[in-house]
Length: 480
Image 1 (cartoon, rainbow, N blue to C red):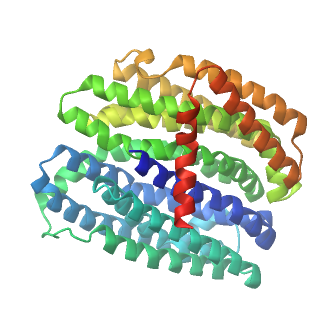
Image 2 (image 1 turned 120 degrees about the vertical axis):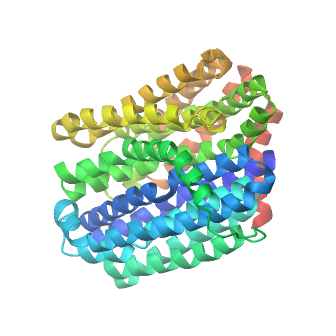
């Protein structure tokens, strides 16, 4: 488990660090308005790719974990056929509707071309999601990490190239081509060794039936996380969308920090469920959330303290609208990461309808609040609504497990990590500044202060702390 965690940690950190590298280049190449056009186009792509595949991908993984090993090839084969057909259909739909969508949302002369040229990304993202699930179930995290890193290298390369031509349409074309080629190779490697079988109506129905509930979950969760940008597109100019997206992007590093612990959790819970070991499931979740709390609590506090200064360095003063917005969104995103561990319980139990009900309620709540909050308070209203929605989801998830919260979460760790994070926040408040040396000193000192504090308070032993932070670094050095 530790090896898989380390590998995924590296790929996820790179995955979420890349936008911090590409963001300043895109803003300075295309300006805030055109950057907003790019974000709005990608929001549409993300929505359709979620419709095209996210629930089906989870259904594939869950079904394989619940079926006999002899059924795996049949499930893999039909998942591939369904992903390809549905992804192609939605990509074609986006291509055909590019002009009206531009008039409705993007409102820019280059919007038609950007949407059309990026429309194949709907299929690309859907296939990439399928590949990630196949690698996950087949326990090949290293291969998955290699392709994840390759996709990010391609993204950075295309962004760097855009500096020289400065054309958003050319950027969209090269971006789509590069991601498509790598994903095609990834799919070949993911399905290597799988005996593809003929299309089965029965298996496809089984996958789609299971996917319906999980699709609603993923689509509702997408709306909670990204629908605010969709609504901002209707009520505010593209620059406001760009500013909010920049702040939100900062907080997605929390997903990178939590994903390595979640990645091996689903197969573990699946094995425990097959063995009728409910106590083992609780123990696995308790141990995973404990480690995530140790990482995520200081990360949220740190982002709230330094995020504004980091935005000033990465972009321009217009993007830096205070650490409060980043901190609010960060709290919500951290809750979402932690809540994913509870979602796995219902997935392995074959009860996705529970998740469907929770996330439909959350999406409706989010929509209703945002319809009032965004016109009145702009992106601050969207940020607060995001936090309130994830609080609601966390409460509902815990209630539906029928497991006492102390058996899922280590509240002693939460309180002590909170105290240690406040000590770290005091240091950051004193030394943080809007220069790279100031940030290095602030972050470095904050990590030391937090680490010493949690060791002193008995949250973690120094050996476990070294393993927690040292294993990903060692793996990275070996790969260098």
